[in-house]
Amino acid sequence: MEKVIIAITGASGIVYGIKLVEELLKRFKVYLVLTDKAEMVAKYEGVYEKLNELKNNVKTYKEHDIDSSIASSSFNHDAMVISPCSMKTLAGIASGYSENLVLRVAENTLKLKKPLILVIRETPLNTIHILNMLKVSIAGGIILPASPAFYHKPKSVDDMVSFIVGKVLDILGVQHNLYKKWETY
View 1 (cartoon, one colour):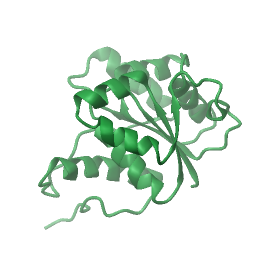
View 2 (tube, helix red, strand yellow):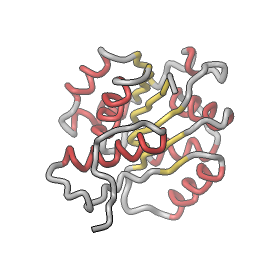
View 3 (tube, one colour):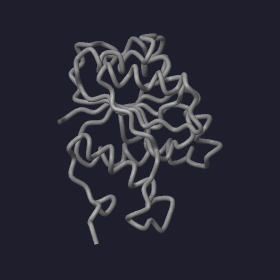
View 4 (cartoon, helix red, strand yellow):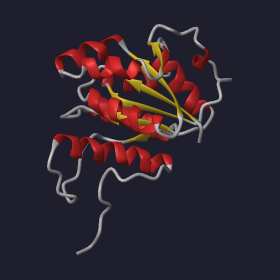
């Protein structure tokens, strides 16, 4: 794996996307797509400065940059992760409605049978959300709810964030030490 596209949408949990980009930048070329709502939510969640720092270290696109090279199915990326993934974004992917760069890249990722991981961040879920997750799963996407485990005895919010990011890295086949793997005692 060489090139990974990360999209951060306007769901709560912007820190998941930030941590994921930081981890992937250690090993791969990362392309970041930010929605307008992601930047707004980052302000509410107190991570706007951290998000801005990140933008200085990675090639960053806005959701409206639909004419960018990553919008084309000829762009040779290895995987896409949307973290966090809003229910609006999930609905767009499930419906094949690619009206912005996040949705267009997700559509291409599915068409090319490459890993598409959606770190959904919503609770509770309604039937429409669940059906949209099913549609994306049937199309080849991977649904990874931002539901941290507790068997590794997290001591901080960062430990819980690291668990979710570690799960994404597990799916991508990337070695890491972000959380202690399950062991029987």
